[in-house]
Image 1 (spheres, each protein chain N blue to C red):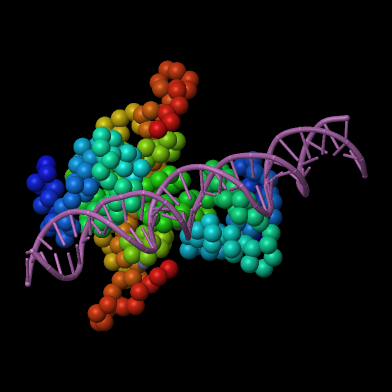
Image 2 (cartoon, each protein chain N blue to C red; image 1 turned 120 degrees about the vertical axis):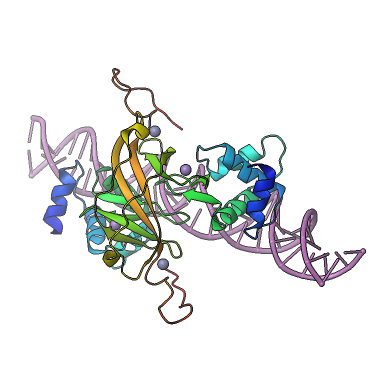
Length: 148
Length: 148
DNA sequence: GTCCGAGATTAGACAGAATCTAAGTTAGGA
DNA sequence: TCCTAACTTAGATTCTGTCTAATCTCGGAC
Ligand SMILES: [Mn+2]
Ligand SMILES: [Mn+2]
Ligand SMILES: [Zn+2]
Ligand SMILES: [Zn+2]
């Protein structure tokens, strides 16, 4: 992983290696919780402001374009991001919007007849329901509200 | 379909039947193109302003809650909506963000072991790639840009 | 039919997310 | 070393969507 491999993946994608980009990538690789741009910006600047808000957004955009980072859109909430490591699906909580990874497994692609002239790139699964925190606890009536 | 069945589905979901709601539902049922809230607002008010922006948003929210309408989040674009008729999956164009329906077929749910205590509600497929307008036309090198 | 109250609508203010602008900085190749 | 394109930056701006507070309207109770 570390610095050197991040530099590799950036440069092999035509992106310069900069401290700001390194911070974003490093943070995403260490935090699988699908942070928002705002959370990433905060985390990266916690110790010593070293990246502006615009740069954080710029870099997230560039990293997504380069295919190193994935953006996950959630209805009614801000976008979330993860470092594209192992391939996986996503679970999205109906209630708190949390995004969690689901182990990858192949899903049947649509019949090419129903695709027409469209060009298929990928086929991902979105599993929806209630996350562990939001699911009613067994036994009790309703458990505490998970706000995150 | 028409007015009476819309009234039915609204009232059976505890929502009053109002002209504004009827317009939103009718528009969604006649336009399978997954319009945005702004597009719906415009369309409904084209002839004769009869719904405020706030009401359009309020009604979309209520209709989604009632399960009559579905909201589709697309990375980096505004939300899109469709009337929940026949069950289907979605195709999202990488390039122009267009959302298109894909015939429904059952997809294998994740192993319950990998779900843990989470409660699964639905399992939808998101197919990604290039839509007909954005796919390079056969023969030619690159075709005109689809901006929609 | 009249009255009442919850539900619905409205204009405009507001909030949050993301992008843009224009100026300055950096870094890598000639 | 110098030049230039890539990058960063603060702040303004745009765009979506929500909230507020006042008004309206529908549908049941009487
Ligand atoms: Mn993930
Ligand atoms: Mn649809
Ligand atoms: Zn949850
Ligand atoms: Zn397209």
